[in-house]
Image (cartoon, rainbow, N blue to C red; front, side, top):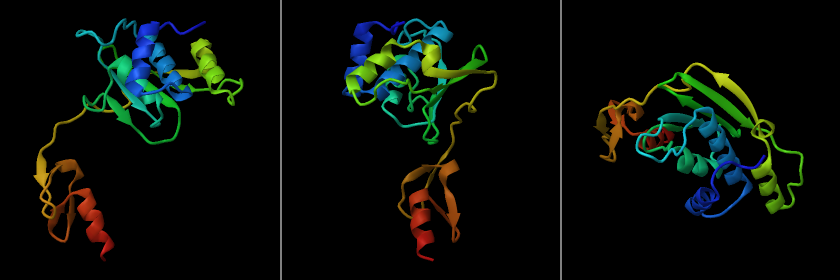
Length: 182
């Protein structure tokens, strides 16, 4: 099986990321898996299904996920948990269904970069990923919180990130700086 995403869209994904690489290929394929599992069609259309994606890595593939599934950090529907794993959880809050996919490296030659990319792009999705269905959201919906001024640097900071130190409200960097002085 080869990737079912249109070549033009793959080229646009590569352009968005800046280069082609095995990590981007993994992101393209896990995005393809989400598009198939949720019957999404073109995720960039105005009425596309709103997904949440939790990524457990900061690899190149996250750019493909942003571009192809419309999950982004700015909209709060792309969450990064720095576990160092090629694990990706997609969840449809409207349907209350989801899945977690973990990349399983194919046995092929990883010394030849182009051959490795080709192998990823042509493999069956169920041989590339260990897939597990989930029935609970991986994260709570984002909350809009008040901003509080840091009493040291005077920058506005989300209230959940403010720390109290020596009777002052401090942002995390100012808190860490003050804590190191002790």
